[in-house]
Image (cartoon, rainbow, N blue to C red; front, side, top):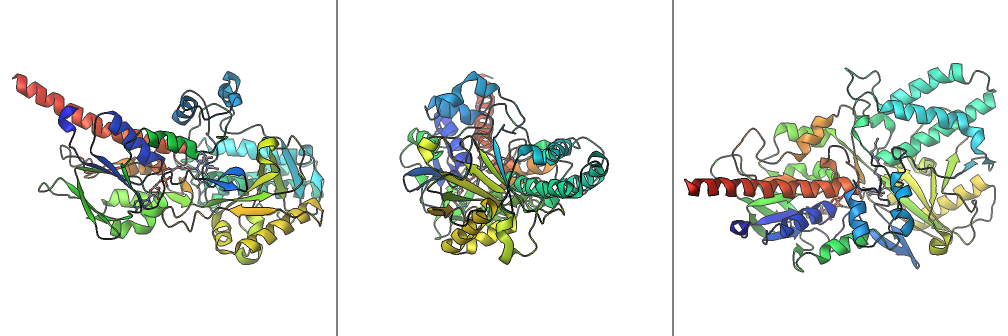
Length: 501
Ligand code: 6YU
């Protein structure tokens, strides 16, 4: 690689994808690698914070599928960042396709604590339908317009036969429970509604075995370890990139990157890792000339939505000691709804429930509420006391206990983060694997074979199977670094072959 030492590579964005790309390049002998980062920190959507003395995650929470194939798990294990329980073979072998065996406490809007068996018919039907939603991938055409449309239509049809012996109040409770599960799925997908999630490509997302685990010292530990293996000055912070000038003609092969303050950098290669949300919002001024149409349409077609957290700390738990998840069932929602009728007055109804931060010795009595969609985006605009008030009323109503008050709360605001513009990507209606392939295609496009690679694309929304995750983002960074490494090694070996002639 010695001949390529001076190849000048700029990575835009110091999230996990950008860091992974730079890490692989530097370790492969490229020494002229720089990262331009808009903010004053590395990590992007990996963001650890504190609530009092408790470590909390504002962004990514879990290693999804912590097992040998998952590079985030392997790195976290290598750096000693995980609890012993997460390292066991038993934990790694656990395979439920991304569904964890969580102990759930269920509360209803009339202040009743329900048993799991009260809502079992709904849980069973929803699980079956969610699984069936992933089976349309290689079929000709899609029988329904979206995942939401499929689930709603099938529930309405199947409940007639399956629940024919159930009384009307119990049946209504099942339908209300399914509304809650639709809202939960909006959080998983990062979409406003499941009506926006494409059915044909729903099976595109793949999982690893392993029971999801967290970083006891914070996800940012992974970032810190990777950064410590890079040159100190590799990241130029507070350098938002405004425009990238590439060339569609034979005349010029280098790329110019212009920052918001006007500063310009020339590079042989640029790896862009900004979020899909940022790309969507700033597409027209980011690339000169504009992206080829097929790539531009994929940026527009793919979904990028909001999923936020509201952490709430309590003096005493109002959930069981073994509880992992608190599920809320609104008893006026038998219409299979995943959106609220009036965002301003009832946004809090979109919050499907809470996860319990464990173990209690580490976190005390700390919950993380989950809320997706436009309701979540509206929540971000409210003053914190107003969010606190809404959470307090919600908890009092569902527990029937008028004196419960959170000690404090803290919420994420990903939609209004100007460098992310939302949480993560999903395959929206009309999307297919081709859109993800278009996302990762370098510039100039593959049609211009033989032309040097100018702009490469990494980031979670460019991974074919693991989009929306940290491991997808990490793998995409490595993939683009490898693209450059193999580009140079094939050029070097053809040069070596030429010199032997
Ligand atoms: C995971 C999890 N997790 C919760 C929440 C969020 C996300 N994810 P980055 O944005 O990080 O980096 C880009 C950088 O570029 C950044 O630093 C910017 O400042 C910078 N930048 C932008 N513009 C710039 C400019 N102009 N110039 C210079 N710099 C610029 N993933 O594995 N486990 O538990 C969660 C969760 C609230 C917000 C998550 C989770 C997603 C990851 O956080 C995310 O993918 C990566 O961090 C992205 O890294 P990156 O480098 O690409 O971008 C069927 C089906 C369903 C499919 N979905 C399944 C669900 C899986 C997702 N689950 C998520 C759940 C949670 C809770």
